[in-house]
Image (tube, rainbow, N blue to C red):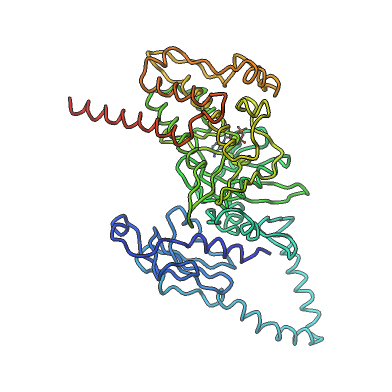
Length: 489
Ligand SMILES: Nc1ncnc2c1ncn2[C@@H]1O[C@H](COP(=O)(O)OP(=O)(O)O)[C@@H](O)[C@H]1O
Ligand SMILES: [Mg+2]
């Protein structure tokens, strides 16, 4: 059985919304809802929709944002109803059978006991029970659910409490995640990585991406699931999370991570066949930097998040969205810094980052592994390499280079740790930059940023925030230039 308390916990945390009634919220199309849960600041809250839910007989009312409406799903154990107008959740009540399930069971028990005492009916009841049990077994055959607890095992709720953040959960309630996972139809395999496969699936007519982890990489699945479920990560430049699921079939465990699906695939895929104009290059670079700023920056408060370092940033772990922006994926190696700043949560993953993208201090093992800042600095090194990959595919003066991974001219494919160390630490090589880049204001500025990312001294590298500021300034300059051009015309 699942633990309603875990569901309750997540629902409570998701239900927290700012109270009060600022006029501008109404003008933005927000609705005002009745707020009744232990987390409400006042009797009302503002959101995109209102919810009413019953968990373990407890009635909760509050607000959801639009991206939380997947939770408007009723389960046998969790009744949820959503609506879209001001105070529409005030008078909703649960159907009697859901709310009164506990009472019904209490009344039925003595009656059942009497029946069992009746010799004539005992045989019948026995047969009937046997049939029921069989049917249950068939439905749940071999199913193992991580969000489930026996009395001795820790639940995800426990993990929440142990976890170092303030714990504002972000994903769907676990039960809903499981249900969603089991309604997905896998359509086609879209990619194979080092540790598993990615499939396009459909759920209620929508495309979703399902990453199926090999059991070799179960720690990445655990880590990514843990981070997505406990940290407020919704950001346009971070891959959107839908749910996680663990099933056991024929004695092997299947680990799924369900996320938004991006048709174009990874940045690595896109750069193979697409060349870019300078402004598209800037859009990509700026969006990856923005995703990294969101990861690296701690946000305080109930809706906050700890600082996170990625540790495996590379073009294969960046996806390209329809609007030309990118989002960062694969948090299986991420490390977190707790709110107080004095505790580092490194996780428990034997996997290491991708050698080709490793910073010099990782390769020569001088990295201060006890300091969170060190991990952010290695991300910046890798970000520089990603920007370099993008810039090679950008057309300036009619010239563009073909796609190659960083250090392609210095190490073979799948380089060893020692080969990378020789190039990056001993010879202190950095990727070369084509002359054409210096003749374009955007590319020249991006090239300058890259070089700063590749300082041997990790502390000398810019922060993600600094870097994003430099790139957004370029972006504004383009907008300004375009505006001026229009006025001149
Ligand atoms: N959310 C997604 N939407 C679309 N395609 C994806 C998504 N996630 C991964 N892919 C594709 O699947 C491939 C394999 O991904 P992954 O298993 O993370 O391995 P790797 O990062 O080693 O390439 C990616 O290179 C990409 O082409
Ligand atoms: Mg990946």
